Amino acid sequence: MPSISFTLPDLLTNWPFEVDPNPSVDIVTESAAWVESFHPFNERAQKAFNRCKFGIFSSLAYPHARGEQYRVACDLMNFFFVFDEYSDEVHGTVVGMQVADIMNALRYPHQPELSNSLLGAMTRSFWLRTLKCASHSSAERFIRNFDEYTNAVYLQAIDRDEGRIRTIDEYFELRRGTIGVRPSWDYYLLSSDIPDEAIAHPHVERLAIAAIDMTILANDVYSYSVEQSRGDDEHNIVSVAMREKGLSIQGAMDHVGVLYQQIAQSFVKDSKNLPKFPEYGPGVDQLIEQYVYGMGIWVTCNIKWSFASGRYFGDKGLEIMEHRKVALLPKTQ
Image (tube, rainbow, N blue to C red; front, side, top):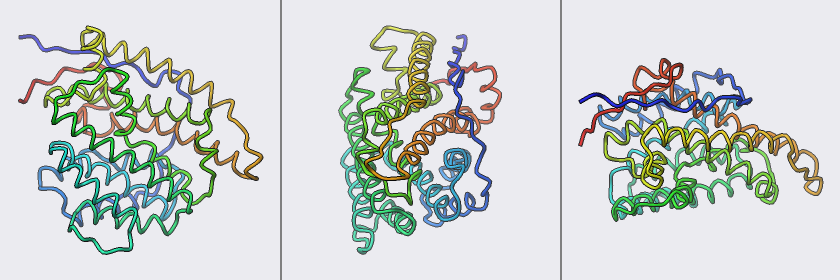
C-alpha cells in the first residue's frame, strides 16, 4: 500500500514579527534541571521531554526577559509539558484531581502541600519564584487565566472519556483554553501593573483571539501526523475539518492554510492601530504595545520551534520546514 503524504501550508508568508533567541542559555539549562529534580518521567518519557527542546521555545517566546523573570518563564513552559503528559491519557476524574492540586498551589502557595502531588509541588515551586518578580495585577490575572486553561484540559479529558465529537466552532471554543496561551502571555507583563480593562479592550482582545487561533491552527497541522498515528486526533482541526466538510487530508490542510492567512492579515492590520489609554496614566500604551508584540512573536516562536524540536517531525524538522512535505505516519494502535 503506497504511503500517504501531504504538504503543510506555509504559515510564515508575509508575517512581519521576527525574533532572535534569548541569549541566556544557562537559565534554560537550570530550568531543565529543575524539571528533572522532581523525577516526573521514566527514562523513555524523559528522553521524549529532552527531544522536544522546550528551551528553544522559551528562548524565542521570551527573547527580552532576563534573570529571574526569564527563569520563571522557562519553568512555566516546561511545566506545561509535564502537565500535558500527565493529563493526556488518563480519565477525566484523574485530570480533575490534577487540576485541583495545581490551582490549590497557585491560590495558596504558602500553605503546605496536603495531597503529595508532584504537579502541585512543581506548581508551588515555580509560582513562589514568580511571585517574587510579579506585580499583584499580573499574578491575579495569571491565576484566572491558568484556571481557564486547566478547566479546559479537564473538559477535553471528559470529551475523551465520552467520545464526544465537536463541531469546528465547538472545537475552537475549547481549544482556545487548552492551548494555554493566555497565561503564557501574562509573563510578558509580569512585573508591570496594568489594568484588566486595558488588556480586555475589544481591540486588544480581537488581537489576542487571532494570535491564539493562529497558534491552534499551526499546532494542529504540525501535530496531525503524530496524533492520528496514535488515534489521538479528535481534538485536531485537521480531523475536525475533514469530518465536518468532507475533505481529504490535503484538502483540510489547504483549508486551514487559507483560514490561517485570513487571520494573520487581520492581526497585522489591527496591530498597527492600537487603542490609547490616557485614562490609566503614562506607560500603559507602551505596555499594550509590548503585549501585542509578544503575541506576534509568540506566533513566530510556535512555528519555528515546531520544526526545530523533535516533537512532531523527529530529526527531519528543519528539512520539512523548507519543503513542507510530510509522510503520514502509520497507525500504532
